[in-house]
Image 1 (tube, helix red, strand yellow):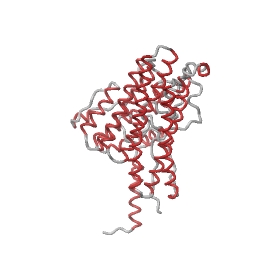
Image 2 (tube, rainbow, N blue to C red):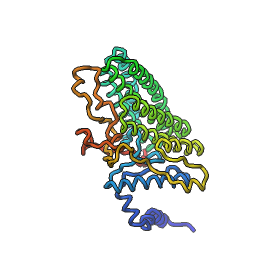
Image 3 (cartoon, helix red, strand yellow):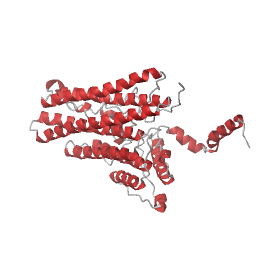
Image 4 (cartoon, helix red, strand yellow):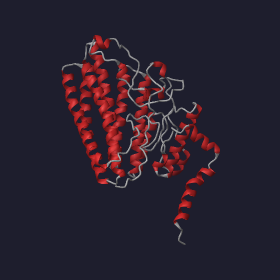
Length: 409
C-alpha cells in the first residue's frame, strides 16, 4: 500500500507525540524540574550501558530535585553532550555563519589565533628565564583566553561548514586543529615540568609560591588542551585515538590531585581534580565503546569508579543488569549541599595575599590561579567564600552543541 505524503506526515507527527501522551505526569514533572541534568545516555548505544547510565542519571536528577532544582552532583557514565560533568573545556552555544563567503575568513582567524598562542608562549618562556613570574602569569592568562576563544571559533566554523554539507572541509579543519593542539600541549607540559622543578628546589618563599601557582596553572591548561584535542579527534571519528587522549587527560587530573596533596593540601580542590579525572576516564570509556572495544570501555569506566570509591562492574550480562551505577557522592570533608555551578570560567578562589601583587611581582594571587566556581561549588565551596563568585549575571554552562540543519547554497 502506498501512503500519501500527507498521511506519512501525520504518522510521523503521531510517532513524536505519542510518547509524550503515554508518559506519566510524575516522569514529566521530574524532567521539567531539573532540565539541566542530562547525561546523554542514549549516545552510549549498547542497551546494557544505556541502562547503567540512566540509573546514574536518575540519582543525579533526584539529588537535583531534592536541592530545589539545582544540580549538585556530576554525571557518572555519560555521553558527549552530558551535563553537568567535571570537564574543564567549555562548550558554549554558537550561531551558524549563514554567509558561506565569510567562512574562509573565520578559518584564517583560527590559524592566526593558534599562531598567537605559540608566539605568546615564546614570550612566556623569556619571562620564565628572567624569573619575571608576574608578567609570565599575565601573558598566560591572555593565552588561556585565546585558547577558549579559538576553540569556540573552531566549533562555529566546522558547525557552519557541516550545515553547508562541506564534509571534507570539516574533516580537514578538525585534523589540522588536533595536530596543532598536540604540539601546543607539549610546550605547556614542558613549562609545567620546569616550573614544578623550580618549585621543588626554590629556597625563597616568594619564588616557591609563584612557581607552584604557575606550575599548577600550566598543568590545568595542559588538561584542557588535551580535552580539546581529544574532542577534535573524536569529531574525525577516530574513536580509539580519542579515547587514548582522554586517558592522558585523566592522568593529568590524577597528577594534579597528587601534587595538590603534596603542596597546599586543599581537600576540596583535590576532590575536584579527582572528579575531573573520573569524568575524563568516563569520556574515554564512551569513545572505546564507540570504537566497539567494550573491554577497554569497561576498564576505563572502572578506573573512574575506583577513583570515586565505587565497586567495579563486570561485563557478564547478568551481573551487568544487577549492578547499579551510583553517581559520585559529595566529599566527606563537606556535609553541606554545594551551590549549583553557574559558569565554567576561571573566576577563582579568594585572594590569599592580594596586596602582595603590587609589592612583589613573584607573589601571584591565588585567586586568579586556582579552579573557578563551576569546579569548586559542586564539591562543597559556596559563594560565601568569595564575594565575586556566583554572580547572577554569569552565564550558565552549555555543553550541548546546537542542533544543525543543512543550509541550501
